Image 1: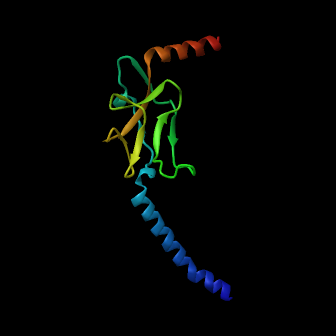
Image 2: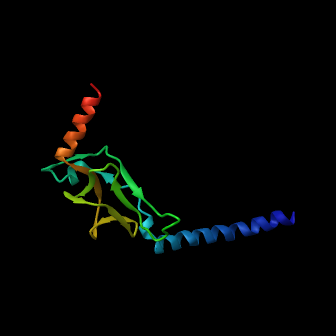
Amino acid sequence: MLTIWFLFTLLPVTQGSCADWIQDDKFNHGCRSCRDIEIDSLANCPGTGHVCDERESVRAEVLSASDPCTCQSLRCTKKGWRLAVNGTIVDKVHCKRGQWFWSGLPAPSIVCASKRYLAILVFSSFVSQNI
């Protein structure tokens, strides 16, 4: 009976410290708390010389045990594809204060872009394999 009473009295203390830890983590590590970002080809594709595809996958790099100070970042998964933000090709976007940024500017949305000739080569290779 004493054990049950002890557990119930410590439960609020544990929950309070978890809430404090979460707040502390948000304040000190806001670069690891970004949420989903919109994929939008119309707003971000550079246009001339590039092709953009909203279906291309994006890789998230997050905190790891070997590098506890790494902030979240996003990149395109496939080789030859890079992120585009507001018509500009960028290597990756970073998380700061819970928001996505590129070159110090907010990134409201992204899309994966490739040089047009690379996309044509990949498509023609796909077609020749499936004929």
